[in-house]
Length: 346
Ligand SMILES: Cc1ncc(COP(=O)(O)O)c(C=O)c1O
Image (cartoon, rainbow, N blue to C red; front, side, top):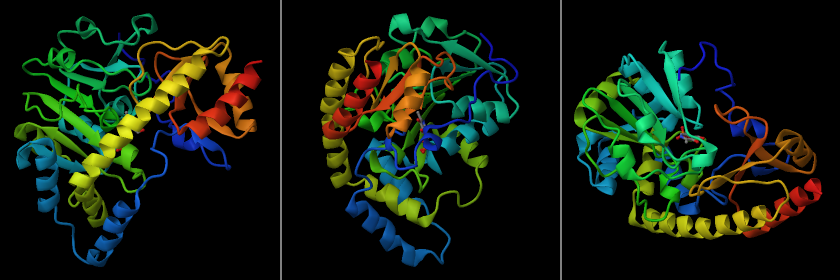
């Protein structure tokens, strides 16, 4: 399946434009209550170094140690979003495919770089699970999200490893992986030829405004991606934040937050499943859940009028106006949201 020449959906639409106006934010999946004080302090302490150009060595070493990788397997980026642009610039795929529905920036970046993009759909009736056999054999660039935004599905690492081929670059977007307790399906620690793992510190640490992420890949691919990058791409405060997020304290806090999130999601799913007309597909493992509801678009607008922002589903390839994505939040927020949602559903 090939994507139309002109995108059929607005690939540049993101949840951040749906929040504001004092709405309760269930549209953007940044963890509540972040960034923590210790992280803000680390960023603030770096400000006295602003006169100097940023030096990456120490930060690259910290990321490498955190994931058990060599330093030449790490590329720091201005968020995961920059990594997708680098992939699109560095490689010249003859047949690029993106597994959908998923975060739209990888496809947008590939198109912006002039590449044709094919889509590999996952189906709601299969719980949005990836069927590795659906990826065309000749695809030389494959992009998959794990866990996937917006379906919340966590694909088995073995299925993803099975997509590796000589001459193929496999990009696995693990922007939400640190929200999965124990990260059982992560490929971040694995040096696999052709594999590019993209990570983000935006979500768990509340650093969307700082732009912090990185790529883990074999040295050859790290060099190719780095060659497409501007000089000094990651600022000194961003480097300080990355180092802080690689500390033992951060690892412990992230692990606890992931467990807490699991409980909050269970509660949200339980209450959602009691609502008339609301259906969920697949097993949610990320900090958000996807739901289907006839006329969801109308309900979303009614929710806005009642003070709640949820993410529209119609800008994700393969979904449509009957889909909504809802962030997992602490119980009190979920309760307030669901009371209003239930009332609107009658
Ligand atoms: C799945 C996924 N990957 C990557 C990103 C971008 O992350 P970053 O803020 O690190 O650029 C997002 C942002 O929403 C996302 O949902």
